[in-house]
Length: 101
Image (tube, rainbow, N blue to C red; front, side, top):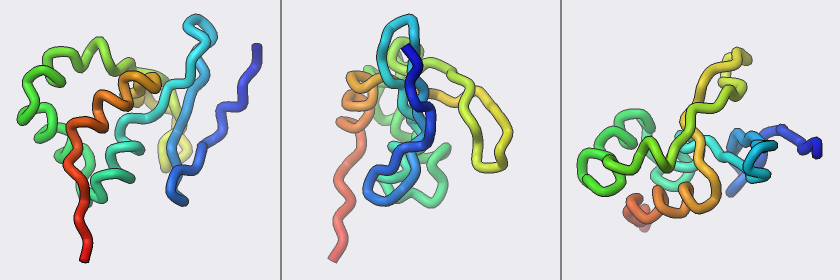
């Protein structure tokens, strides 16, 4: 089964995706999802601090996230931390809501 591996849009922003043939599931870039939901200026540091604050999430990170080759912003293919829908929902639980006035 061939699936479209193009970038998906969420709230008008790009989320890199990958269709995993073996598990027949979509994988989403953790960095992209966290960037959109947290509105962080440095998403890598945000994820690092999020994992530090949540020991359960940190201890299961390798189970939740899988390195997958995806196209980076510069056009090169790199291993990106990705998760399926269940993993993304677990990560989202660790992101406090962004309050804007």
